Length: 205
Image 1 (cartoon, rainbow, N blue to C red):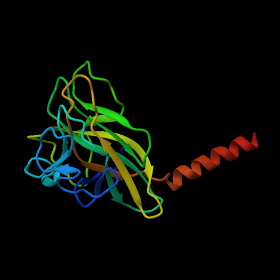
Image 2 (cartoon, rainbow, N blue to C red):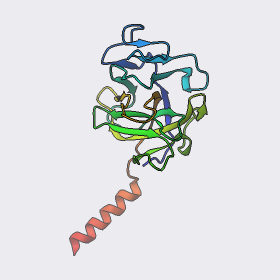
Image 3 (cartoon, one colour):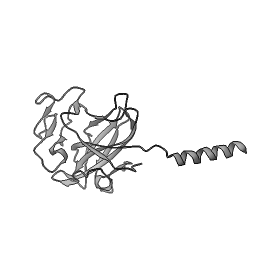
Image 4 (cartoon, rainbow, N blue to C red):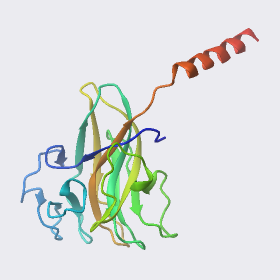
């Protein structure tokens, strides 16, 4: 459905909560990537977007769902993508995400033939952006998973929920970078007129 240019929003401490509460260093997140069952907000990287990435390490189940809030135009429809990194071409790093509390989508960033095919899971550099994000770096390759279309609520909010995807095999690592969105275009006046004319012809028959 992607027709326009995407705007990228980095997931950081200003727009992301953990388990429904504000991030608190040492309580519900860490600042180093270790297997401690906490999300790590790694701010040491210059090769990811915003110089920060939320990391769930291989071998741990990071506690608490991340939720990033976008402040957009109330009542407007947007196509939403979650952006994540993968540097393992065989097993793939992974993520599970949803928008506005809907059904979760599991995605694995790999080109391996044995990887499950998830609709809307693409290399991020195949999409168009208002300003291009970083596509490659120490985090490997940036992937974009479409979460579908969401409508901003009365306050203009759209929320994206993210968890690490626990798998019995594979690399099983999550690096969540942020969110991308674009307005879903409304039908043009010309198209609406054409549809109206078709409807009129059908009624006359």
